Image (tube, rainbow, N blue to C red; front, top):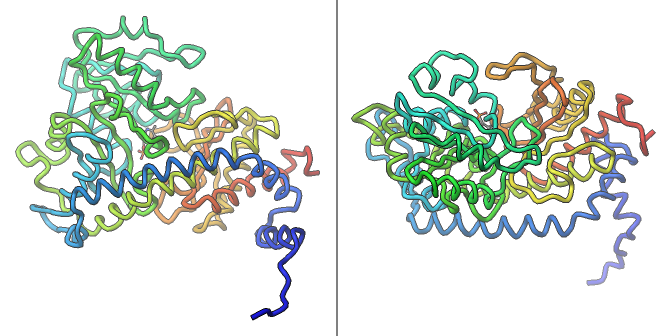
Length: 443
Ligand SMILES: *Cc1c(COP(=O)(O)O)cnc(C)c1O
C-alpha cells in the first residue's frame, strides 16, 4: 500500500531528535555542540561495540560450560548449604576470569570489603604488603592502616610499603626492585585511577609489572583491584599473570542489576583463604545463603559487557566534549580506555558542584534532589556525590563524585544505557552554562 506519506526531511529529523531534549531542559546550543562532538566518535564507538561483542560471548560461553540451569536461580536461606546457584555462579566467574576458582557473594558488602577480605585473608602477621603503583584508593588507606584505623592490617602486624609511579605515569622499576624484600607477601595493583589523576593501567601494562615482580619473587601473590575495569578490554588481569582479581558487583560485573555483592577470582589457594575469612575457619565457602540475589547476579553478569560499553561511550563523549571546551580530561579524548571513569579537571569547586548537580538532575531516581559536598566516611576531604540510582550508590549507574580539594576534578562514571549517559553529560554542560561558569559558544 502506498499511503503517499513522505519520509521526513533531514531538517525535520534533526528537529525531531532534539525535541525530547528541549522538553528536558537542554538548550539548542548545548545539544548542537554535543552532536558536533558525537559526529567525530563513530570509530571509537565501533571499537567499544566490538569489545562488548567479544565479552558477551565470553560470558555466555562461561554460563553454558557451567551448565547454568533454571534451578541455579533459586536461592537458599539459613546456612545456605548445597547452594547450587551460588556454586555454579562461582564457576561462571572463574571461567570468565580464567582462574581456578572464585568467591561471589552477597555477604561481601562492597568493593572495599572485597579488597579488605582479599588482603586480610592472604596476609599473616609479619608479612608486608606492597603497592608498586602509588597510593591506593582512599578507603583502602584505613584497611591498610596508612591512616590509623580500628582493625586495620597494621594493627595485626602487617606492614605496608609503597612505590609511587614516576612523574610520567611509568613504573619505577628500580624502586620496586628495592622495595621487594623477604617480608613481601602480596603486591596490590590498582587498575583504575580511582580518585586520582594518574593514568589507569591497561591490562597489558599490568602484565608487564607482574612479569617483573614474578621474575624476582615468583612466590609473591599479585592481586589486582579490578574495580571499574571489568569488560573494558577483551583481557582481564588474570589473563596476564595476576593471582587474584577483586571487585564490586555494584560496578561493572553486576551489570546494574546486582543489588549488593563483591567477587574475588583467582588461585584455589587465595580463594580458599578468603572463604575461610569471609565466613569462619572450618566453615569456609560451604555456608552463606544466597537469599534472593542470584537471578540479578546471573542476569547482571550477562548484561555487564553491554552495560559497560554504554558507560564507556559516555566516558569517551564526556572526555571529548570537555576537552573541546578547554579543560584537562583524564584520559584524553583520543586516548585508549582501561576503565569507565572519566576525570574532568575544573580547577574550581563551583564547577565540580555544578557538574555533579547536573548529573543528579539527569537521574531516573531522585532527580529532584540537589546534592552538596559532605564529610563522607572513609574519605579525607569533603566529597560531593551525584547518584540517582536504582541501586543505592551503584556507580555503574550514571554517577559523579568530586572530592572538594585541588585539582577540583570531577570523576564521572556509569550509565546503564549510552542514551542516558549522553543526556546526563549534556545536562552537566547545561548546568555549567546556566550558572554562568562556562560561556564560550553558549552565551
Ligand atoms: C570503587 C572502588 C573501590 C571501593 O569500592 P566500594 O564499593 O566503593 O567500597 C576500590 N578501588 C577502586 C579502584 C574503586 O574504584
